[in-house]
Picture 1 (cartoon, rainbow, N blue to C red):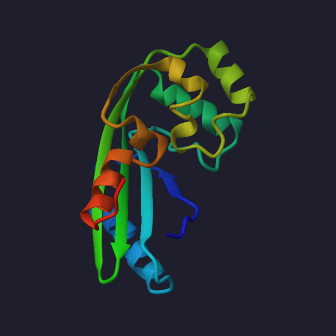
Picture 2: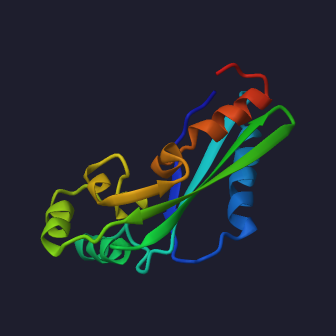
Picture 3: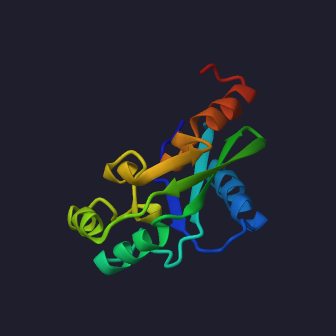
Length: 162
């Protein structure tokens, strides 16, 4: 099995267009044409973030994104696809993350520490920002970027023991 770089993006759209989950399936199918082995791909999306920063923004974008998450709930959607032979299958994990209120001093320390950069939503659920998470409804591993239960189910459906 080939392991490649994950594709992550942040979006403030309230709905998940079918095209975004199809993107995972199409990418896996296209990559599979060049690889004889099993291919696994994933797409990670953080929704309802007012500024949609995190991955490519600077300090001010990260701070604005985190202010938008403060005392609110947002959705994290991760699609995963597996292709083997002529068949490809897709699963989608949808989780809700509720943040407590983030005070400005804590936010400034967090951003200055560099953790929000390169992260969808400007935070890592497994990092220091977890201190602000009041509640999670859904998949912790899906919020991290690869829903392990759904991934294992897909692999098992192809006869892979895991």
